[in-house]
Amino acid sequence: MQIELGGRSLDATDRCLVMGILNVATDSPVSGSVVPVGDAPRRAERLRDAGASIIDVGAQSTSTGAAQISPDEEIARVAPVVESVVAEGHLVSVDTWTSSVARAAVQAGAHLINDITGADPETVSVAVETGTPIAIMHMRGRPQRHREADHEYHNVASEVRRYLEQRAGEIKTAGAPDVWIDPGFQFGRGLEDNLRLLLDLPDLANLGYPVLISASRKGFLAELLGHGELRSHDAQGRPGMLEATIAFNVLAAWLGAHVVRVHDVEEVAWALNVSSAARELQRAVLSARAR
Image (cartoon, rainbow, N blue to C red):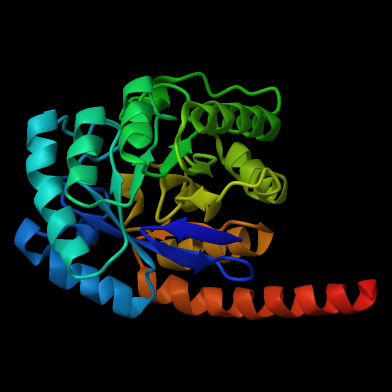
C-alpha cells in the first residue's frame, strides 16, 4: 500500500512504517516520551534518525485519571511544536480528540489528524474543510474514562471491524481525502479482546484503509507478561515492557498493520526490518507460485 501524506508517498507494501510519539503532555504514563516544547525539534530529529517516518505530537494524555487541560492550553502546547517540527521537514500528525485543537494544528502544518474517539462531526469538518487525512479509532466510552465502559463483546473483532468500515465510509463520503483506521488496543478491552484484535488485523487491512495501531507500553502487555491487570502508569516499571512492545508490534506488522505508533522508535524500527524482509520474501514466493 502506498500512503499519501503531506505531498509524499510512503511505501507500506511490505514494510510497516513507524510513527514516533512526541509528547508535550505533563502526565504521560511513559515519562521518557515527554519533552519541553522548546526541545521538540531536537527530539523529532532523533526520532526520525531512529527510524520514524511520522512524528505524532500530542499534549493531552488519554490515560485513566489524567489531568484534563483546556483546548486553549492544548493548542498553546501543540501548535508551536507542530509548526517548528514541520519546518524541519518532518511529516507530522496531531494526537487530539478536540476539533479546535485539530484545526489549530492543521493551520500550523500538521499533515494528519489522529482522533482516538472515532472523529466527531466537528473534527471531521476540519479534515474535510482543510483537505487533511484523518485517523479514527474504535473505543467504548470516552478518553480517560474508557475503563468505565462495558467491556463485554459478543465478537470484539467483527464489531470493531464493522464500526471502522462504516465510520471510515461515512467520513470519506463527507469529503475527507483519506481515512486511516485504528482498532484501539487497550481502550475498553480485556486481555483476550486485545489478542483477538491482533489476530483480526489481516481482515482489517483487507478493508483497504491504512491500518494504524498504538499498543506501545500499554497496560495489557504487562498483564500478558504475567504482572496482573495494571494501568499503563503502573505497568512501566515492570520487567519486559520494552520486549513485549517490540514483539507485539512485529506481530502486528506481520499480520498487516501499515503504521505502528511507538515510544521506543529505534528498538521497534530495527525489529521491523526483520518482518519487512520476511514479508517481502513471502510476497515473492507467492507470486512465483502463482505464475
